[in-house]
Length: 188
Image (cartoon, rainbow, N blue to C red):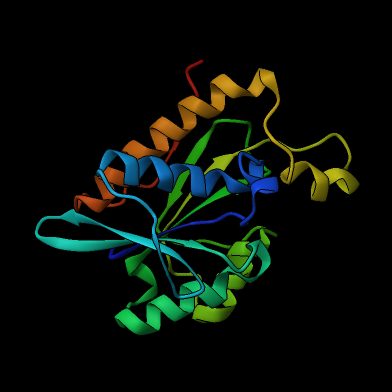
């Protein structure tokens, strides 16, 4: 059973709505649907709790910036004595088309520095992950700027749908449903 859900992103108004912050966007929606807000700083992040089957599930948005997300996640995992498989991580994915979702029970970081940091600090890649496609820029050297930019007008409808679908999947997992390995393509 999942006990901690982590949404990856970067703190600061300049990053709000950026492609790299899609994990935060999903957690904000999960919190909103549960009638709660992220209001408490702990574990080098901001947290809130949601109820599920008489258990509290912690939602965590690391404030360490993407490349050091593992510091926040590992601190929370140690405090709650969690195994990696009890932690769901939501992140962006450059290698999937915009709006496509993929959920896995474990996996590799695929070059994503936030996931890389978490794997390093937990000492394992055996944590579930929900990845949301953000597409890839035309040239490889554009990646650093691309992930920190907002979605284009053409991508907005796909991202809104992806956030809704990712929120639904996350809520199902929080409610105790088994993690079903799957890929979901956008309908828009």
